[in-house]
Length: 367
Ligand SMILES: Cc1cc2nc3c(=O)[nH]c(=O)nc-3n(C[C@H](O)[C@H](O)[C@H](O)COP(=O)(O)OP(=O)(O)OC[C@H]3O[C@@H](n4cnc5c(N)ncnc54)[C@H](O)[C@@H]3O)c2cc1C
Image 1: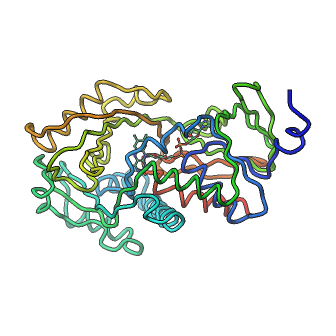
Image 2: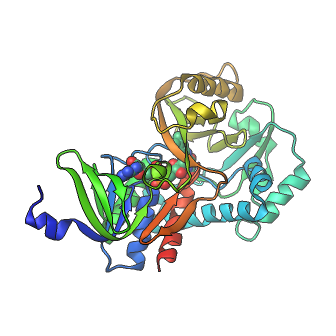
Image 3: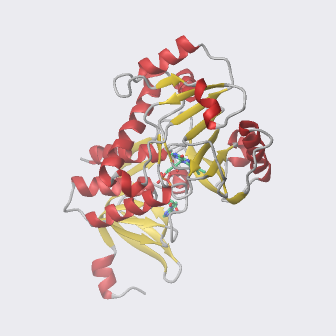
């Protein structure tokens, strides 16, 4: 049973947002900046965001050489360029908004180990030309760095300009503070179970179902969007990582992409965070379950030995998984769906960079 006060003051907003991940927070912030007089409420189903934003690897990246080449092949040059631009611009927005110190941004450098044959002149030129107006000389060859970084695996090393790292926990904390300071209300422990054109139904552990009125509704729950909006076609993709205990004398510093980005490795101080391997078992990994797949965890351990040599010693401290969202192509879905309902989903494996752009884009669509 609701009280008079709850009914009269606490169950409506101008703008309701479903999902308190990085995209929900960025969308809320952009909308509040653009329309300061509107009240904005975010509904997050869990005590902490429970998707990808607090569980990722913290690469502040735009796309590796072979990934971009593959995107050009599958989506065409224009869409591949647009995706790179959105990631690049999105990261600028978030860095400017929150400041590099608050998000633990380090210009650590990004590398890709390319094991397949590529035509250096033609392929690197193609990628560099595509985005020369916003990241000039994006890709360079840097084989001479392999030794310094301790990489013994076969393949050629390339570096991606302007790639960095964030501290994922610090980024989320700073983004929440930012949204709160703007006046956004964040309600946690609130699972949205139904979306109508002017209201949401929220499931609350103590009160049961509650109706919440909103003039505009933005569904920003990424991999979970289809359960609320069946017409939004996103497929979940689980990402798994582990982090090692500190490794004395660790030579590697920066980010490393392997196998078109299906494996990703970075240092976190003197630890290594290593993830990926979804391509080993796409079918099993198309899931919303936050469990681990032992075969993939084992593949990650083996791959680390291939990269740094069989004598490379490491001990794993923690393993975890998070859920990403994919679809037919790699461009995010950002649109006005119907009546007062909008959606921002399908952030793929690079939502850290995209989030800032998505917030601005959706605020633009709404106005
Ligand atoms: C292991 C891993 C590594 C990654 N590494 C990187 C990386 O290095 N760099 C990078 O850029 N990206 C990386 N990503 C991807 C990146 O984390 C995501 O693209 C990004 O976090 C997506 O943000 P989001 O807010 O759209 O989605 P999410 O973070 O999934 O947020 C959605 C939120 O909606 C909530 N929710 C769901 N359903 C409901 C509901 N019905 N009612 C209320 N709330 C709901 C969820 O609890 C969740 O908090 C990685 C992802 C994973 C899993």
